[in-house]
Length: 225
Image (cartoon, rainbow, N blue to C red):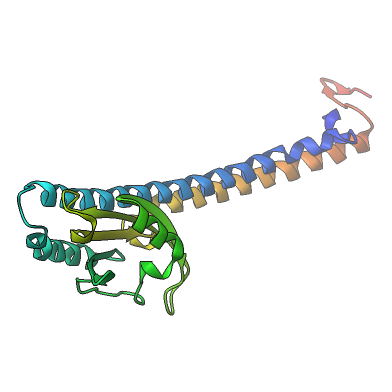
């Protein structure tokens, strides 16, 4: 018990508290990474949707580009109706990009061309991805992960459709099971209580040790002094 009476050694009893803090930080970071992984998976699904639509449009290079319009509209509107998913289809009319599908807004209308960085990317690349941060009306700030692609690529630029799709963290409908989160909290709570009790016990024993001025031990027939 000598270390409990040492000027610096007594602080070793705080090691369990430090471990508990690191454990809490680990669980917090792990939960965040799980959410990020779910968002990346949702974003990959969105990219796959656009790429599959593009593959269908590109399948017959002999087909007139305008014949794909209704199929593109139907596909984009289906995606846009999904929970917290943004999807839009545009075409050039008199050198202006016009939205051709009906949008189903869950928050407030989102117009990607209101953002210069998206306009620059979409007008200079055949496909690409970027993140747009914005705050919908009466909603929380979010970062929208967008993916866009022009189609069909066998047509000249003025005879193509621009399809855009995007997701944010609010698009993720899967979540970490409640029992996992509750298990973490219970584990941390129990660990905190046990560590606190052990620290108080050790501190008490340290005071007793110091008060006796050294080790005292009992032997048969009497006390060792």
